Image 1 (cartoon, rainbow, N blue to C red):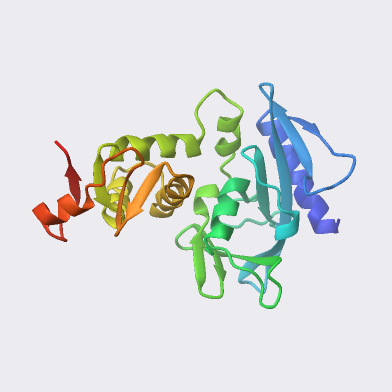
Image 2: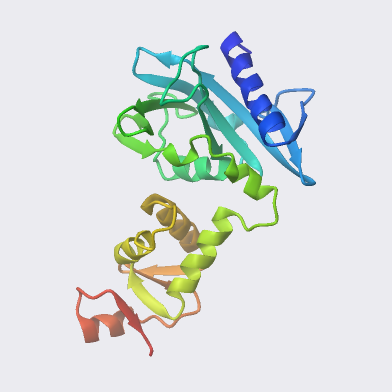
Length: 250
């Protein structure tokens, strides 16, 4: 491990142990996991990636697909390293705490892309937008707002508590909103975003796409519906034309 990598790992361990009261266990061999944190009889696996601010523009870390570990209790923490006695975005320590399953969705849906001529390597370029207080991934023509993960250790604390995970909550919300109806996907995304919860359109879209792949939702001609619902798309178009939003049997 490089010197900066070791510093970043120690910063994350200190954050887990001192501020969030995790017990820390180090693996005998590094096989994609830097340490395990235990809290309330639940454990999380953590991989740490660290970068200095480069060329006064961005932070840069590499991930390798063949070394990625995906599970509900695995997290990747990107350390956006700040020199001692200095600050970035008003903070002396900046972490992006990203669930591995979120990374998996971003990679599979091409929101995060591979290096040219090396499909296994993912160049992670993270740009701080100082005026807007945002952290943005940019590579090639792809751009992804990662600000929601900024120092967000609640994502890990929620997993080790008795509360439902964010993923479970979004799945339950989407299914509850759509049961018994058919709705245009783009309109449904707009409706969900307007609920004013602390989620983005992309969060909902990723969960909807996964529910479609898993068979919990159906998609037909731009409409989505619950798996056990009658196919109402044709009926909807006959009665409402192509410009409407919802239809139901009621």
